Image 1 (cartoon, helix red, strand yellow):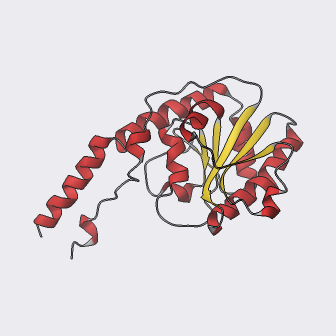
Image 2 (cartoon, helix red, strand yellow):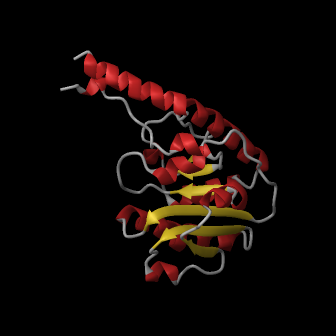
Amino acid sequence: NLGAQNIATLPLRSLPNLLKQEREIKDRDVLHLFFMGASYNVHHNRKAAELIIKDVAPELERQMPGKFMFHILGKKLPEDLSKLCKDNIKEEGFVDDLDLFLRDKVDIAVIPSIMGAGMQQKIFEPLVYGIPSIISERGIAGYPYKHEEHVLFANRKEEFVENILRLRDVNLRRTLSINSLELSNNIFSKEKLDQIVTKGLESCYDQ
């Protein structure tokens, strides 16, 4: 029995390969935001998409028409939500070249984490790309990303809307991008991952 004190958190294995060193933050009139769910058969992905499609995106279109475009990525978006993808919401479905899409096509990640446990790829992938991100605090899984330094935290519709409006500021987007890349490279590098594995193996041998 290892005991809880000897159990290290192993990051998602794909993150070291996705890490970027820098990101160009574009100052453009219409900002492109995205949410990514691997499959909307998963209940917490559906609930997050529902919040964006039914509440957040329509409110932003009401406040600033034509200034925010939402892209919903992932397979099997339920038909009732798919029908609502109009105006400032585009259903992308499965994206063949996700790396290109995340590097060049989007400005902001919007990631409600209403339920579900553990470390979720959809939360950390934008951070290792340096994409300015608005995230539910519970989804950060104990990693040291801080509000207004690396990310913006939001839990309710009003907080998501408010923080998206704040990210019209290109300087804030640049600051979050630079800081999230620096932190992500520190905690999710291949070297760091190897250290965690080595430490875990050593603790096993020490029992």
